[in-house]
Amino acid sequence: MFARQKYYYTHQEYLKLDGQASEKSEYYHGEIVAMAGSTLNHNTIAGNLYIDLRIALADKPCATFFGDIKVWLEERDYYTYPDVMVICGEPEFVGERTDMVTNPVVIIEVLSKSTAEYDRSDKLHASFTLASLQEYVLIDQYRMKVEYFRRKDQLWELRVFTKAEESLGLKSIGVDIPLSQIYRQVKWEEDHE
Image (tube, rainbow, N blue to C red; front, side, top):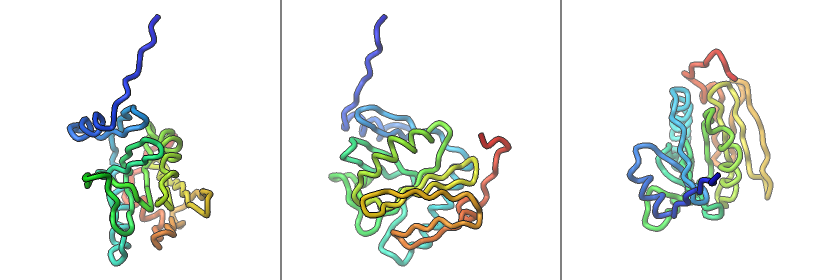
């Protein structure tokens, strides 16, 4: 029996394919990882966060980005598309590319059933290598649950929020968002897993 050999893509091959593709994919150590299709809840949650952050940061030197800007994680050989991210100060681009940055302060991912494990493991740990990153947030779209990671000295601490009256306090940018706002207009399914 023959083992199927994996094909490893170069950065140039990935960037060319990603630029031509109708659906986004991420790059991890030479492998292309397809991103999950979006749901109404996913879009609603990411949209709520984008709007709330955009309004809250209007008078600060920070900008909010939504889904189409890649982050290059050089230390882990990884290109990723966060659902929402915040950059303070000037974006640091990769070469001449204005669609790829290296300095987010906050990254927010809305979890999908097919990507939750990946978002909590490889992607999470790769993101922790960014010197600029202060906070990383995982939002469950199937039940009210927010996992909040914050860099404190050289360690990362985790807090979990599950109640509508609780707030996600993003300390690095001075913004508090109640879970009731994050989940506004979300239609819960009967089966939450």
